[in-house]
Length: 202
Image (cartoon, rainbow, N blue to C red; front, side):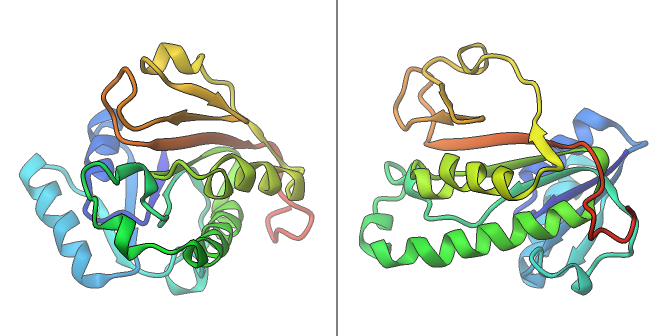
């Protein structure tokens, strides 16, 4: 299985993917910051795992892609971090309402790029540490409406995943301090049914 961990630093999710999928998986860890990729390398060395590490822009496939599609893509997107304020209260001082539109533009760009890299039948997981609908369920609903070759992937009920988790559009929302004692976190799993008409692989 060919897997892309976009926005990978510091590498915790890359390590988890490798532990789940085993040594036969072909995992690429991508991050726009070459310096932060060193954190990924350090974490993987600690776990005694290996992946292909690439510095590149997840919103611009020309900066890193070799043309071969991925079976699975994880987009842990840059976001407002509104779900982790209880651990990082400075976020309340550093973030402004005007920050949200640039974040959603970046998130949309990364998702659109990821879709072009995903093989038909492949799955894409979009995740944020945000509790804002604009970055989560509203963004995913708009993305699905624009992309008829995508559909929500089947998943278990949110309540089976973590106490206090909420069904939120086609995704799952965890709220800070809910029963599970987690930070605020959102994810949605999407499946590509066919190649897009404009896709060169169509």
